[in-house]
Image (cartoon, rainbow, N blue to C red; front, side, top):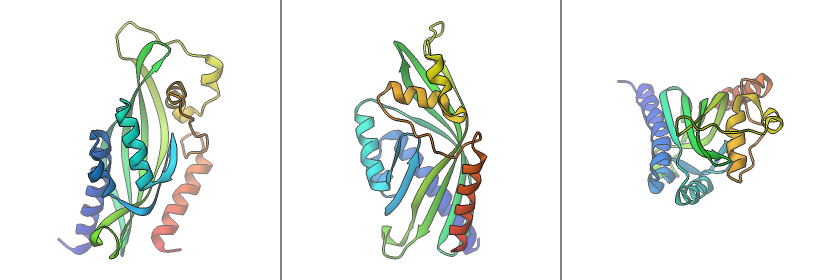
Length: 202
């Protein structure tokens, strides 16, 4: 197996490990995936990788449990830089009023990774993590219970992650309106162009 294929496997393992560690509350394992100057830009937070680990730890301690059902990662490598793209179904439990619900958000995660000799022991590490949201759905956790939505409020959220936004607000968080998604091809195309330029070193 040549070096390029080994690099692709290493980056794919990095991406899958980061999400698995996040889901299971394995904080040292999660922190080891990020370069110190990395960026995480998702529905509820934009911050550095190390700060994302701390925010995730706080949410986990408060009982928030996410699950990421990951598809295989597609990896492109250029020297010590790589892009990874992975299909992902994000399962987020929450409440609408008194009804326990689960949101399922369909997205693709886009990761920039770099191999730096002075960081993470020369291993590949994550430089940025961003999603493109496509569509989401919501269901009651107890069959027969029916969540009641504020229709006007729901209509005000982005179509590609409206139920995710609704449940985030119910839990006291502020969803971001400016993320790449199927309903905003301009933002998606700009993000993907920036990813390609970064990989090429431009």
